[in-house]
Image (cartoon, rainbow, N blue to C red; front, side, top):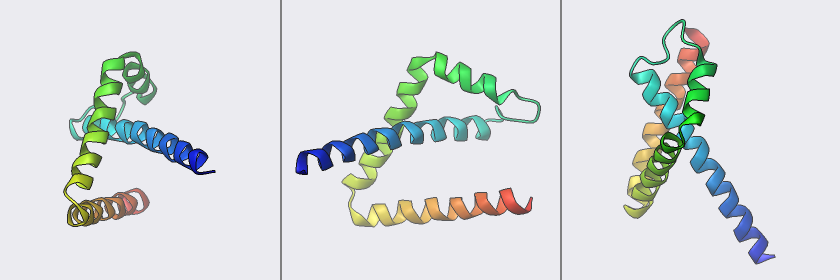
Length: 98
């Protein structure tokens, strides 16, 4: 049972690293103006997937950011959590009311 739990936890960690890499890519594209009005987001997604180096770079960034927060201990995790939770509420407010 313990090996199965370790395997599932690792698989979930890999999944979240990939999805977080996608989020970092879209955040950087939005911040640089690459997702403005009239942009075909399907094409942006397909271009991203066609370039494996971009996928790997953004997944590596996600893992590196996570490792840095964990390496620095609980205080760093708390700080990252505060930033991410505030960002989440800002995004939700923007999506619902703007």
